[in-house]
Image (cartoon, rainbow over all chains, first blue to last red; front, top):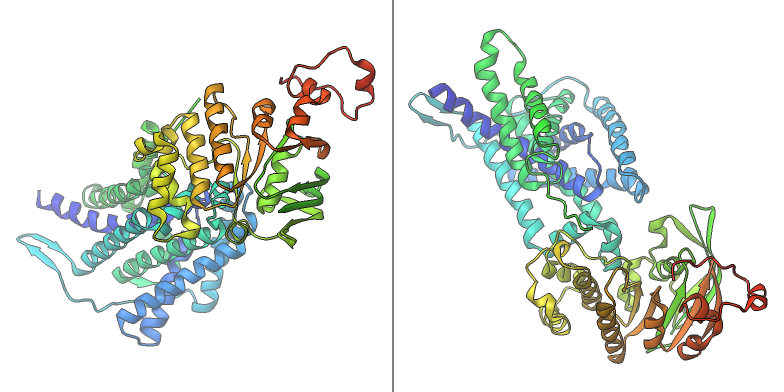
Amino acid sequence: MVDFIQALGSGILVGLVYALLGLSIVIIYRASEAFNFAIGEFLVIGSFLFYIFFFDLGLPLLIALPLGLVAAGLVGALVERLTIKPLLGRSPLSMTIITLGLGFFLRACVQLIFGSHSYSFFLELPDITQEYGDLLFLSDPIWAGMLSLCTFGLIIFLLFRTRWGLAIRATSENQAKAMAFGIDARFILLIVWAISAACIAIAGIMISNFGALSSMSAIVGLRAIPVVLIGGMDSIGGALIGGIIVGVCESLAGAYIEPLGLIGFKDVAPYLLLLIVLLIRPYGLFGEVRIERV
Amino acid sequence: MLSIENLRVVYHDVISVLNGISVTVNDGEILIIIGANGAGKTTLLRSVAGMIDFYDGDIIDGDIKMNDESIKGLDATDIMKQFGLTYVIEDRPVFWYLTIEENLGAASFSRWDKKVKTDMEDVYGLFPVLGKLKHRKAGYASGGEQQMLAIGMALMTKPRMLLLDEPSLGLAPIITEELFSIISQLNQTGITIILVEQNAHAALDIGTRGYVMETGRIVLDGNARELLENEDVREFYLGSGKKERKSYRDAKRYKRRKRWL
């Protein structure tokens, strides 16, 4: 029982980070109708930008973090301007393919600049390790979970309580209609990509903090795929639930199935779960109910 | 005053849709544009509203002037902000997944200020049914309610000129009538209106002047009253002309292929 709760708890904490990754996929999908396959590279670039400000320049965390996020946002905006905007009005599929190519390109850039070796990455956050009897939750995952949850809340507040959020939601639904009513759809898309890149950077920094940072960290970004497909591609709440489900599934598989001799099953389990979910609900668990009128 | 001079528009660099159109719109009038499907009415409105490049179209010739100032090539948002020109695109351009209140809020994005709330109340005053449904998602509203919402949203942008693209599309006759009376009410408050319609009779009834478009050209223009009396218009758009005037038809530039009336 203790094992179970332990696995569940750590699963939820990691799941919250995955949820943030899922959210950044979802907001782009809703706005551009494209799936951002370059998420892993965004994650690495965001983390490296933070790395430069925090470790290389030695700025204090409270300055380095916002600077890193702004820089990551600018990279996201630049990518949108250069690759997605020229495709406005074309099929969303071409944007999705572009992001695939972009992934390779960005990965090569990162390897050129930073090399492919690992960088040690350690944030000196206050120790908030929780220990209850036999249960032990380490400080880093708790910080990661909390920060991700805060960011998630912030994004939801932005989307549902501010006028910019209203404009983003309107543009996400239909760019032509939004433009006709005086919303600058192109600028809104730019903002959405920037926000998404910043969210991915936060998740990236938290994940790097578990271990080290290298260009191979990009693989973690792919965890967002089962998250959004389980939760529903266009559902923000679905990203949260999907993230937690994937995190828990992974950690339970790690605790119960891997000891049976199936080493590495932890990484496969979310995809198996994804298959089952898609068989039952092809739109994902919380895919938006489409308003159909005849 | 809006004047469109010899406008030519192509889509995807090859499909020529407008072949030299000149239209003038005087301040304070209701201008009606009628024409068959594919005549280029919507393209004309898109060009004026600055949204043509979004649909991969290009203005290759001619000019669009608002009070002698060219607005060709400006962004849709700039045209709206500077010239108070709002384009209500066809087929009820409301955001289905936002509530009616949020829809009105989204439409006032470009001019967010303290008066948005009172303007919303004004829209609810004009369309009481919207006030009752304001927390409902717009996608679940009926066709007439959606079209009223679309016009309400256009009013939230504080327009001086409204471009309405087939507001009567898919609405019951009685709702169309209500809608058109609201449109003439709006006109009396000083908003210039350009109305593109398939429902020629109802439109010409409230209009001051009208143009008839055929395959990217203006083939007829005049006072709304004159157009209502015109033999060609009666035959092709009002369905009440005399059918046996064969010799006259030969003289016309366009062929008979209007089966939708």
